Amino acid sequence: MYKPLRCPSYEDVACQETDKALQEAIRGEAAAIKFYTYLIELTPDQVQRDLIFGIREDEKRHLNNFQAVYCRLTGCTYSYPEPDVDQPASYCQGLAKAFNDEQEAYEFYKANYFCNKRHLVKKAFLDALLDEAEHARWFNNLLIRNGCFQDP
Image (cartoon, rainbow, N blue to C red):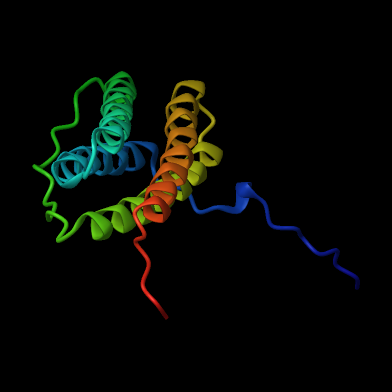
């Protein structure tokens, strides 16, 4: 008997429990804030410093949003451990790590956006995923601007 092919969709994504996804998002945002604090110290000029400072401020907003949603859903604030974040060895290394981390965060937030049905949760993940895509674009721009390339 003929069985029609089933097309994959975002509904097929294996979803974490919402509270666990929010906890992971909170820890990730806290780690990004700490990392960008280190990266700002290595930044070669004020224009780039201001840009990374603005990105760090976005991450603080995401952290607050995720904490607020978590508290609304569970009735308590999530107490996360101090992020274990290494300082980058160089500005270029820091930019590359930031670029990769932003892309990973984007994918995580996108999956959780599609996994959740609660408007409040979806809104927090959507806000963060849109910013993370923009941040990745800016870090890619800074990688190019600073000549942070390695020959293959």
